[in-house]
Amino acid sequence: MSADTEALRWRRIGAVVAAVGVAAGAFGAHALGEHPRLETWKTAAHYEMLHGIAMCLPGLPKITRILLLVGTLIFAGSLYLLVLLDQPWLGAITPFGGVALIAGWLSAASALPPSGHR
Image 1 (cartoon, rainbow, N blue to C red):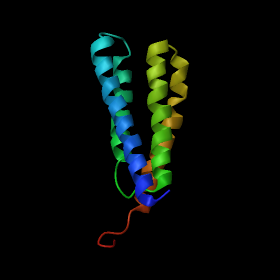
Image 2: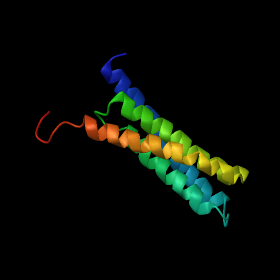
Image 3: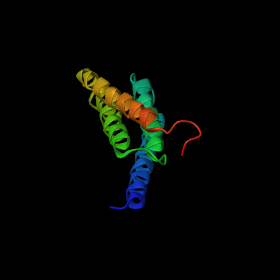
């Protein structure tokens, strides 16, 4: 797969992840009403959207994108399930997604060229 093809594939993946984040946020705002864990849902949608956008950024290494995708799926996914299934134990899974997200951002930071060098 060429670098351009792979970059396009990741932009598409990131765009879909961000779109699902927007849809999840809208669902939470309109369907969950006064749900006691609405803030948890909002956090999941917010993180999903931000990290979907990040996956679209040009020049990120593949490992960074993978970490952001896996982290988002685990972090936001566990929070969505926690709210929908009312299973608080799912919150114990969320930090694993957070660690993957942090690793993704650190991977991005280590891959950036020094200022003025391209």
